[in-house]
Image (cartoon, rainbow, N blue to C red; front, side, top):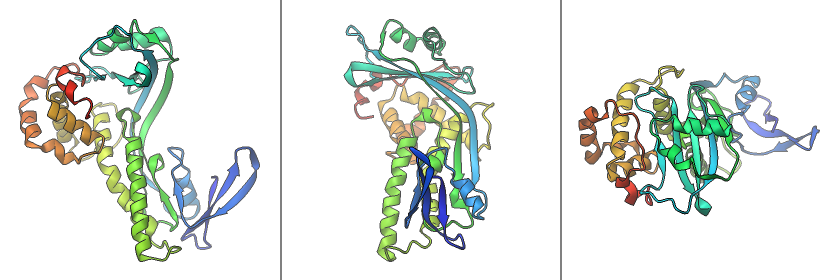
Length: 333
Protein backbone atom coordinates (compact mmCIF):
# COMPACT_ATOMS: atom_id res chain seq x y z
CA UNK A 1 0.00 0.00 0.00
CA UNK A 2 1.45 3.33 -1.03
CA UNK A 3 -1.37 5.75 -0.27
CA UNK A 4 -4.98 6.38 0.69
CA UNK A 5 -7.88 7.29 -1.59
CA UNK A 6 -10.13 9.89 -0.01
CA UNK A 7 -13.47 11.45 -0.83
CA UNK A 8 -13.52 14.87 -2.46
CA UNK A 9 -13.77 16.63 0.89
CA UNK A 10 -11.29 14.21 2.58
CA UNK A 11 -13.90 13.30 5.21
CA UNK A 12 -13.65 9.58 4.45
CA UNK A 13 -11.30 6.98 3.01
CA UNK A 14 -12.72 4.98 0.14
CA UNK A 15 -9.74 2.89 -0.91
CA UNK A 16 -5.99 2.54 -1.26
CA UNK A 17 -3.25 2.86 -3.82
CA UNK A 18 -1.28 -0.39 -4.08
CA UNK A 19 1.89 -1.31 -5.91
CA UNK A 20 3.15 -4.81 -6.60
CA UNK A 21 6.59 -5.63 -5.24
CA UNK A 22 7.26 -7.41 -8.56
CA UNK A 23 6.29 -4.40 -10.68
CA UNK A 24 6.90 -1.12 -8.87
CA UNK A 25 5.96 0.85 -11.94
CA UNK A 26 2.40 -0.46 -11.99
CA UNK A 27 0.15 1.22 -9.40
CA UNK A 28 -3.41 0.04 -8.85
CA UNK A 29 -6.40 1.49 -7.02
CA UNK A 30 -8.43 -0.71 -4.71
CA UNK A 31 -11.85 0.52 -3.59
CA UNK A 32 -13.08 -0.62 -0.18
CA UNK A 33 -15.44 0.37 2.61
CA UNK A 34 -12.90 0.05 5.42
CA UNK A 35 -9.10 0.28 5.43
CA UNK A 36 -7.28 -1.36 8.35
CA UNK A 37 -3.69 -0.20 8.81
CA UNK A 38 -1.77 -3.01 10.53
CA UNK A 39 1.47 -2.25 8.68
CA UNK A 40 3.67 -2.03 11.78
CA UNK A 41 6.08 0.58 13.15
CA UNK A 42 6.81 1.87 9.65
CA UNK A 43 3.20 2.95 9.10
CA UNK A 44 2.89 6.00 6.86
CA UNK A 45 -0.68 6.82 7.90
CA UNK A 46 0.35 9.90 9.98
CA UNK A 47 1.94 11.55 6.94
CA UNK A 48 -0.91 10.50 4.66
CA UNK A 49 -3.43 12.08 7.01
CA UNK A 50 -1.55 15.38 7.23
CA UNK A 51 -1.38 15.46 3.42
CA UNK A 52 -5.19 15.23 3.45
CA UNK A 53 -5.44 18.22 5.76
CA UNK A 54 -5.78 16.42 9.10
CA UNK A 55 -3.82 17.55 12.17
CA UNK A 56 -0.59 15.78 13.06
CA UNK A 57 -1.05 12.64 15.16
CA UNK A 58 0.33 13.12 18.67
CA UNK A 59 3.03 10.67 19.71
CA UNK A 60 4.42 9.47 23.04
CA UNK A 61 7.97 8.16 22.84
CA UNK A 62 10.13 6.23 25.30
CA UNK A 63 13.70 6.16 24.03
CA UNK A 64 15.34 3.11 25.62
CA UNK A 65 17.82 1.86 22.99
CA UNK A 66 17.25 -1.89 23.41
CA UNK A 67 19.29 -4.49 21.59
CA UNK A 68 19.17 -8.25 22.00
CA UNK A 69 20.79 -11.40 20.66
CA UNK A 70 19.19 -14.84 20.48
CA UNK A 71 20.69 -18.28 19.95
CA UNK A 72 19.33 -21.82 20.01
CA UNK A 73 21.15 -24.47 22.07
CA UNK A 74 20.65 -28.20 22.41
CA UNK A 75 19.73 -29.15 25.94
CA UNK A 76 22.34 -31.68 27.12
CA UNK A 77 20.90 -35.13 27.78
CA UNK A 78 22.63 -35.15 31.17
CA UNK A 79 21.23 -31.78 32.23
CA UNK A 80 19.10 -31.80 35.36
CA UNK A 81 17.64 -28.84 37.24
CA UNK A 82 14.61 -27.79 39.26
CA UNK A 83 13.78 -24.91 36.89
CA UNK A 84 11.87 -24.93 33.64
CA UNK A 85 12.65 -21.40 32.43
CA UNK A 86 15.04 -18.78 33.72
CA UNK A 87 15.32 -15.00 33.67
CA UNK A 88 18.01 -12.85 35.24
CA UNK A 89 17.21 -9.17 35.69
CA UNK A 90 19.46 -6.39 36.98
CA UNK A 91 18.69 -4.90 40.39
CA UNK A 92 19.62 -2.33 41.55
CA UNK A 93 20.05 -0.72 38.15
CA UNK A 94 23.85 -0.77 38.26
CA UNK A 95 23.80 -2.79 35.05
CA UNK A 96 21.66 -2.63 31.93
CA UNK A 97 21.93 -6.32 31.03
CA UNK A 98 19.54 -9.24 31.36
CA UNK A 99 19.09 -12.72 30.00
CA UNK A 100 16.54 -15.47 29.44
CA UNK A 101 16.43 -19.21 28.81
CA UNK A 102 13.18 -20.66 27.47
CA UNK A 103 12.55 -24.32 26.55
CA UNK A 104 11.11 -24.80 23.07
CA UNK A 105 10.24 -27.78 20.89
CA UNK A 106 12.67 -30.67 20.17
CA UNK A 107 14.29 -30.44 23.60
CA UNK A 108 16.26 -27.27 22.91
CA UNK A 109 16.65 -23.89 24.59
CA UNK A 110 16.13 -20.43 23.18
CA UNK A 111 18.64 -18.16 24.91
CA UNK A 112 18.22 -14.39 24.67
CA UNK A 113 20.63 -11.79 26.05
CA UNK A 114 19.62 -8.14 26.07
CA UNK A 115 20.84 -4.72 27.06
CA UNK A 116 19.29 -1.28 27.06
CA UNK A 117 20.63 2.23 26.49
CA UNK A 118 22.89 0.85 23.74
CA UNK A 119 24.73 -1.64 25.95
CA UNK A 120 24.04 -4.47 23.50
CA UNK A 121 25.28 -8.04 23.00
CA UNK A 122 26.95 -8.81 19.68
CA UNK A 123 26.80 -11.69 17.19
CA UNK A 124 30.33 -12.79 18.06
CA UNK A 125 30.36 -16.15 19.88
CA UNK A 126 33.03 -15.17 22.41
CA UNK A 127 31.29 -11.87 23.13
CA UNK A 128 27.94 -13.64 23.50
CA UNK A 129 29.29 -15.89 26.24
CA UNK A 130 31.14 -13.00 27.86
CA UNK A 131 27.90 -11.01 27.93
CA UNK A 132 26.14 -13.94 29.61
CA UNK A 133 28.97 -14.17 32.14
CA UNK A 134 28.60 -10.44 32.94
CA UNK A 135 24.98 -10.78 34.13
CA UNK A 136 24.16 -10.21 37.79
CA UNK A 137 24.18 -13.95 38.37
CA UNK A 138 26.18 -16.67 36.57
CA UNK A 139 23.30 -19.13 36.09
CA UNK A 140 22.75 -18.60 32.35
CA UNK A 141 26.46 -18.65 31.54
CA UNK A 142 27.00 -21.82 33.55
CA UNK A 143 24.06 -23.46 31.77
CA UNK A 144 25.11 -22.70 28.18
CA UNK A 145 28.91 -22.56 28.28
CA UNK A 146 29.23 -26.26 27.43
CA UNK A 147 25.94 -26.66 25.55
CA UNK A 148 25.92 -27.26 21.77
CA UNK A 149 24.81 -24.24 19.67
CA UNK A 150 22.25 -25.14 16.99
CA UNK A 151 21.97 -21.74 15.31
CA UNK A 152 23.84 -18.58 14.54
CA UNK A 153 23.31 -15.56 16.79
CA UNK A 154 20.43 -13.35 15.63
CA UNK A 155 20.38 -9.66 16.51
CA UNK A 156 17.56 -7.17 16.83
CA UNK A 157 17.68 -3.51 17.85
CA UNK A 158 14.80 -1.35 19.00
CA UNK A 159 15.50 2.34 19.61
CA UNK A 160 12.21 3.42 21.15
CA UNK A 161 8.63 2.57 22.07
CA UNK A 162 6.12 4.68 20.16
CA UNK A 163 2.46 5.30 20.85
CA UNK A 164 0.42 7.18 18.27
CA UNK A 165 -2.66 8.81 19.79
CA UNK A 166 -5.25 8.57 17.02
CA UNK A 167 -7.90 8.76 19.74
CA UNK A 168 -6.86 12.38 20.39
CA UNK A 169 -7.49 13.58 16.83
CA UNK A 170 -10.24 16.17 16.77
CA UNK A 171 -11.49 14.46 13.62
CA UNK A 172 -10.73 11.12 12.02
CA UNK A 173 -11.68 10.16 8.48
CA UNK A 174 -14.38 7.53 8.23
CA UNK A 175 -13.30 4.27 6.65
CA UNK A 176 -9.88 4.03 8.31
CA UNK A 177 -8.67 2.33 11.50
CA UNK A 178 -5.12 1.82 12.78
CA UNK A 179 -4.03 -0.98 15.11
CA UNK A 180 -1.07 -3.16 16.11
CA UNK A 181 2.42 -1.68 16.01
CA UNK A 182 1.12 0.94 13.59
CA UNK A 183 -0.75 2.44 16.55
CA UNK A 184 1.44 1.41 19.48
CA UNK A 185 4.85 -0.26 19.33
CA UNK A 186 6.14 -1.68 22.63
CA UNK A 187 9.63 -2.50 23.84
CA UNK A 188 9.72 -6.13 22.62
CA UNK A 189 11.65 -7.40 25.61
CA UNK A 190 8.40 -7.53 27.62
CA UNK A 191 6.64 -9.76 25.10
CA UNK A 192 3.40 -7.74 24.98
CA UNK A 193 3.06 -6.73 21.33
CA UNK A 194 1.46 -9.90 19.93
CA UNK A 195 -0.98 -10.19 22.83
CA UNK A 196 -2.06 -6.56 22.51
CA UNK A 197 -2.46 -6.93 18.73
CA UNK A 198 -4.68 -9.99 19.24
CA UNK A 199 -6.83 -8.11 21.76
CA UNK A 200 -7.10 -5.19 19.32
CA UNK A 201 -8.17 -7.50 16.50
CA UNK A 202 -10.78 -9.02 18.78
CA UNK A 203 -12.01 -5.55 19.69
CA UNK A 204 -12.23 -4.60 16.00
CA UNK A 205 -14.44 -7.63 15.39
CA UNK A 206 -16.72 -6.77 18.30
CA UNK A 207 -16.91 -3.08 17.45
CA UNK A 208 -17.75 -3.85 13.83
CA UNK A 209 -20.49 -6.24 14.88
CA UNK A 210 -22.00 -3.66 17.22
CA UNK A 211 -21.85 -1.04 14.50
CA UNK A 212 -23.48 -3.29 11.90
CA UNK A 213 -26.28 -4.06 14.33
CA UNK A 214 -27.19 -0.36 14.30
CA UNK A 215 -26.24 0.84 10.81
CA UNK A 216 -26.45 -0.32 7.22
CA UNK A 217 -23.59 -2.50 6.01
CA UNK A 218 -22.11 0.28 3.86
CA UNK A 219 -22.56 3.04 6.46
CA UNK A 220 -19.52 3.36 8.73
CA UNK A 221 -20.07 6.97 9.73
CA UNK A 222 -18.28 7.66 13.02
CA UNK A 223 -16.93 4.14 13.35
CA UNK A 224 -13.25 5.04 12.95
CA UNK A 225 -13.21 7.60 15.74
CA UNK A 226 -15.16 5.35 18.13
CA UNK A 227 -12.84 2.43 17.45
CA UNK A 228 -9.66 4.42 18.08
CA UNK A 229 -11.14 5.57 21.41
CA UNK A 230 -11.81 1.93 22.35
CA UNK A 231 -8.35 0.89 21.19
CA UNK A 232 -6.74 3.37 23.57
CA UNK A 233 -8.32 1.58 26.52
CA UNK A 234 -6.72 -1.73 25.43
CA UNK A 235 -3.28 -0.15 25.05
CA UNK A 236 -3.25 1.91 28.26
CA UNK A 237 -2.32 -0.77 30.82
CA UNK A 238 0.40 -2.64 28.86
CA UNK A 239 1.89 0.71 27.85
CA UNK A 240 2.03 1.79 31.49
CA UNK A 241 3.74 -1.46 32.52
CA UNK A 242 6.35 -1.27 29.74
CA UNK A 243 7.03 2.45 30.12
CA UNK A 244 7.33 2.28 33.90
CA UNK A 245 10.00 -0.43 33.62
CA UNK A 246 11.95 1.48 30.98
CA UNK A 247 11.77 4.67 33.03
CA UNK A 248 13.52 2.99 35.96
CA UNK A 249 16.66 4.00 34.09
CA UNK A 250 17.32 7.73 34.58
CA UNK A 251 18.84 7.98 31.09
CA UNK A 252 15.68 6.70 29.36
CA UNK A 253 14.16 9.63 27.48
CA UNK A 254 10.49 10.53 27.43
CA UNK A 255 7.73 12.11 29.47
CA UNK A 256 7.27 10.17 32.68
CA UNK A 257 3.61 9.53 33.62
CA UNK A 258 2.20 11.01 36.81
CA UNK A 259 2.62 8.71 39.82
CA UNK A 260 5.13 6.46 38.10
CA UNK A 261 7.53 6.35 41.08
CA UNK A 262 4.85 4.88 43.35
CA UNK A 263 3.85 2.37 40.67
CA UNK A 264 7.48 1.33 40.15
CA UNK A 265 8.05 0.91 43.86
CA UNK A 266 5.08 -1.40 44.28
CA UNK A 267 5.76 -3.54 41.19
CA UNK A 268 9.39 -3.88 42.30
CA UNK A 269 8.25 -5.47 45.54
CA UNK A 270 5.77 -7.72 43.75
CA UNK A 271 8.49 -8.89 41.36
CA UNK A 272 10.75 -9.88 44.22
CA UNK A 273 7.91 -11.86 45.82
CA UNK A 274 7.44 -13.90 42.63
CA UNK A 275 10.75 -15.67 43.24
CA UNK A 276 9.45 -17.33 46.41
CA UNK A 277 5.64 -17.24 46.36
CA UNK A 278 3.82 -19.36 43.71
CA UNK A 279 0.55 -17.45 44.08
CA UNK A 280 2.26 -14.11 43.48
CA UNK A 281 4.24 -15.52 40.54
CA UNK A 282 1.13 -16.84 38.81
CA UNK A 283 -0.83 -13.64 39.43
CA UNK A 284 2.03 -11.47 38.18
CA UNK A 285 2.42 -13.35 34.90
CA UNK A 286 -1.32 -13.49 34.35
CA UNK A 287 -1.45 -9.70 34.65
CA UNK A 288 1.68 -9.27 32.51
CA UNK A 289 0.12 -11.42 29.79
CA UNK A 290 -3.24 -9.66 30.16
CA UNK A 291 -5.17 -12.68 31.38
CA UNK A 292 -6.16 -10.71 34.48
CA UNK A 293 -6.59 -6.99 35.18
CA UNK A 294 -3.88 -5.08 37.11
CA UNK A 295 -6.14 -5.03 40.17
CA UNK A 296 -5.21 -8.71 40.65
CA UNK A 297 -1.83 -7.50 41.95
CA UNK A 298 -3.60 -5.86 44.88
CA UNK A 299 -5.07 -9.09 46.20
CA UNK A 300 -4.54 -9.24 49.99
CA UNK A 301 -2.20 -12.24 49.56
CA UNK A 302 0.01 -9.96 47.43
CA UNK A 303 -0.59 -6.47 48.78
CA UNK A 304 0.32 -7.03 52.43
CA UNK A 305 3.44 -9.19 51.82
CA UNK A 306 4.58 -6.61 49.24
CA UNK A 307 4.36 -3.84 51.82
CA UNK A 308 6.50 -5.89 54.21
CA UNK A 309 9.12 -7.01 51.70
CA UNK A 310 10.85 -3.62 51.27
CA UNK A 311 13.79 -4.29 53.58
CA UNK A 312 14.59 -7.59 51.92
CA UNK A 313 14.56 -5.97 48.48
CA UNK A 314 17.20 -3.35 49.25
CA UNK A 315 20.54 -4.32 47.82
CA UNK A 316 19.27 -7.37 45.94
CA UNK A 317 21.24 -7.76 42.72
CA UNK A 318 18.90 -9.84 40.60
CA UNK A 319 16.19 -12.43 40.82
CA UNK A 320 15.37 -15.43 38.62
CA UNK A 321 11.74 -16.41 38.16
CA UNK A 322 13.02 -19.96 37.89
CA UNK A 323 13.00 -20.64 41.63
CA UNK A 324 12.28 -24.22 42.67
CA UNK A 325 9.42 -22.90 44.76
CA UNK A 326 7.41 -22.02 41.66
CA UNK A 327 8.30 -25.16 39.75
CA UNK A 328 4.85 -26.63 40.25
CA UNK A 329 3.28 -23.47 38.82
CA UNK A 330 5.25 -23.46 35.58
CA UNK A 331 2.71 -25.46 33.58
CA UNK A 332 -0.03 -23.00 34.47
CA UNK A 333 1.91 -19.72 34.12
